[in-house]
Image (tube, rainbow, N blue to C red; front, side):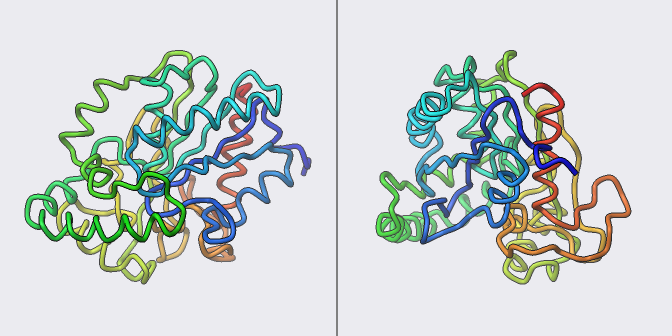
Length: 277
């Protein structure tokens, strides 16, 4: 197989989700994915945005990141592959920050485009606990390098009401190619790390990846709901290869089954290359 199978026309910018960052050595969010993409010809960059800042704050920071990438590579545009909250930041910087002329594509992986009924419910039932917990979390995030953490408001931006307004204010830019993916765990035991969140979300909204349901993540050019070929399924952390190994040696039996997340990202990059991006 060609070592240049992922040599896209434009550089690939990976945008992480909430609660983490991609600054070494504290967190390495993307597992094997950057290494495998680069090995197959891709030019890969990181967002380096805060883990717990608001969507708008991170988008403003990412404008500078994109300009630096374009300057250093000489490219005219970039491709964005974003996980979770990173997808909202990608959409905001394209639509509200006016970056549609330099973004070729936005691929979102389990991004809460339509908000979360679970977050609606938890904020309504436990507002004080969430505010206090968010304030404590902000202190920790500053120690981990966040420049402007605001955990409570970041959580509020996942509500269905907020995302309804967000979507009206941030329509797709016709110059940009969009696509979205969703994932599900087959049971709470699919990933013990996400067992309790999976059960909570399941009680309110149905099948999910431990945080989000397919309905939450569905956006333009929806590519479907993906899971594993065995009884395990795929969790929200699995989607960025946090364990850094294949789920199973068993080959996928269906079109929307994945045995290895690194290979899944290779297929995304191959498709972007085929589309001329």
